[in-house]
Image 1 (tube, one colour):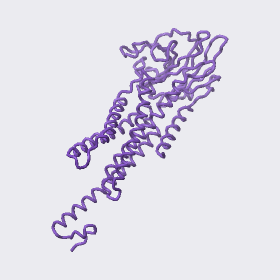
Image 2 (cartoon, rainbow, N blue to C red):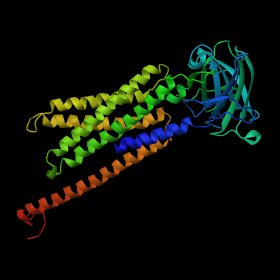
Image 3 (tube, rainbow, N blue to C red):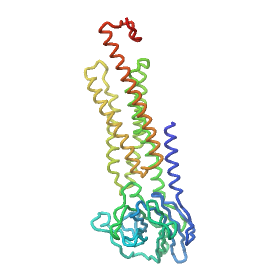
Image 4 (tube, helix red, strand yellow):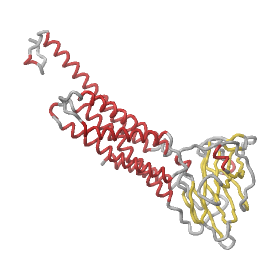
Length: 400
C-alpha cells in the first residue's frame, strides 16, 4: 500500500506539473480570451475567436529540445492526425541563426520519409503568422527555450471544432525539418477542441489516465513485487524457524504481482487499440514476453511435483529459469516504459530507481550473509570430520 501511494504521488505530481505548465492568456504583444494546456510536451495554446467573421487569433507555446531543432504547430482540416496537417514550423535560420517561421503541408510522403519536407504555401486562409522567443530580442535558441507561434486564421463558417497538431524535432537540414522523436508522447501530440466554447475532446484525457494507471500498476507489479517475491524464495526458504511459511509468502507476493501485472498489461493492450498510429516497438514486445513467462510461472503451481518425485529437480530448474527471466524482463520493461511515456528524467523514475536499488542492496546483504553462514558451516563440518570438534559442539564451534 505504501509503494502504491508513493508511486501515485510521484506520477500525479509530475502530471499536475506538466498540466499546469505556462498556460497563459497574456503575451508581450497580445491578450487572448482563452487558454488550454495541451496533453503532451508541456505545450499550450491561447486564443481569441471572433464569431462575427469566423476569425481565430491564437498563440502556440512550445519548447525546443535542441539548439538546432524545430518546433511546429498546425491545423488538420479533416481529421485528428499528422497526415494532412497544415503546419507552421519555427527553427533557427541555417545562415543567420535567427528564428524563422515557414509553412509546410504534411502529406503522406512525409510519414514515409521518402523525400525532404519542403516549405510551400498553405491552402487554408492564413491571414498572418509570426514567431518569437520568450524573452524578447535578447533571447537565444537553446534546449528548453520557449517559442511562441502566432497565427490568425479564417475558419470555415459554423465550424469551430479544430484538430490541432504540434511537435518538435532535434535538428533541421537546410530548411527541411527532420523527423521528430517517436515516443508515445510525440506520436500522440494531437488534440481537438471547440474554439468557441473551449471544451476539449475527452480522448486524450482518458488516454492520460490510462497511461497513469498502466505505469503505476506495471511499476509496482513487474518492477517491485515480482523481484521481492524472488528474493523471499531465495533467502527465506533456508530459515528453518519459518517452516513452510516462506512458500506462502512467496506465492502470495507473486500471485499479487501477476494479478496487478495482468491488469496493467490489459490496459496497455487497450491503449494500443486506442492509438492505431502509435508503435510501441520494444516496450510492447517485452511486455508480451514478460506476461507469457508470468503466466507460465502461475500455471507451474498446478503441476508442482512433490519433493520426493523424480521430476522434482527438472521442475525446479524450469521454475528458476522462467522466474528469473520474467523478473529481468519485467524490470527492463519498466525502464523502457518510462522512456516510452516520456518520463525518462522524471521524479517517478528516480523514485523507482531508489526502490529498486534498495531491494538490490538488501539482496547483496543477504547474499553475503548466506555465503558467510555457508563457509562457516563448511568449516565446522570439515573440523568435525577430522575430529577436532564433537557433534555436541555443532553450534558453538568449541575445540575439544
